[in-house]
Image 1 (tube, helix red, strand yellow):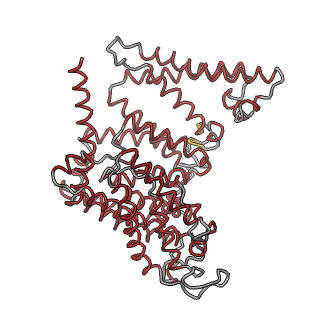
Image 2 (cartoon, rainbow, N blue to C red):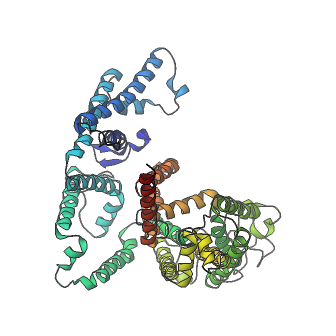
Image 3 (cartoon, one colour):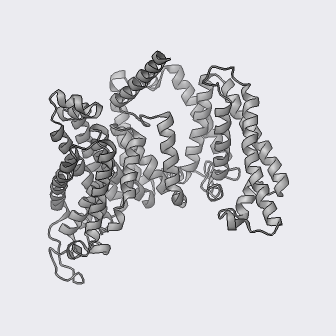
Length: 544
């Protein structure tokens, strides 16, 4: 990963992403090692402890380089044992020096990084927060340089002083760092964003939310025309996962039902839309080589049919699992997802669903003059339905149905004892979640002009579940943020696509350790976790 990531500039000519990855690993270990022990013993001297921990990390890397070098000198080919060890990787780890000198530099560099990480413990809490915020923002802006550069140029502004070769210039990096730290420091001094904004002319405390929503709406609407078609297509893909995430959020976040086969509803949406609109579908022609003039119906008429069918299939899938909970429920729903994919692949249903080839010649949404397959226009179409799904989700959350789901999620037995019809509301959760998620499949088929079983694998269910967990289960803004992080970012860093699952795993582990409620947690969910943690700590103290 270090070798592959080293091709992406963060600060052009100075810092590459591969080096950043190495520094974060060493610095993170040193920061943890130099912190205050939880057992109440005396804390170590942080700078010295961080330097020692950093040097130990660097020594491990250096030892690996020396072992590989000695093996090569003994006539062994290192890549026979370590497949990814290439000369380019060794050059990075030795700073293009000979192995012994490079190993010494690595240990010294790692000790320095560790010492700086340890010194962070000496900073006041505010200074530590500003430092980490500034460095994190610098990394994010550096990685987003290709997008921001296009946006700046789209506004007709010069960008050569800020970005160069898909990375920040030195001046640009200093500007990002200074502006981030200064802005955060100012907001902290003003008592937060709301108080600072209320001091601006023409803005009162009562209309801050309206102004923020208006500004966000302007950005969302103008974004496709400030970026190129590729980024607009990525935004469309993010929109599809927002639709899927909102649907799964109803099942997992609201009702607390772990569904690992959600891809089934995605496939239902795509296949029903494809079959009812395709020019070579069995409803309009007997010969797939002879397309019909028109599909059985248009996309706009097929969409409500798709929603109704997905709703009914959600009821059918939900009915057999009404008495299951936890891991058993997850395994059964996983089975249903695989059953749907296997059915559309089967020779038995090949005349209807096209087998491995799928259903092709799916027309774009009419009218043709709007060219809805053009990325910018498809973005607006998906955005409109994503906003509709957001509205439906928010209304459901605070409705009587949403409160029943919340009661089920917290304690199903007590909810049933209090008169909540668990069977009814579980079925509703599966059905409504399916109806929302199928919209993503419908737009997916219209976007690609095909519904193919290869697009509906278990990985899709895992991705959507990761979006919900990362953003915060039960949180509508969390679904949006989770989609941007787990879908948008990997698409924009497509050269690192082979490491997507590694990154997913690392992110989810960190989220579970440090923010178990998600990046933007639902208030009720965060309160439940806080109460559970407090109860556990209280029980532990009482037991001791």
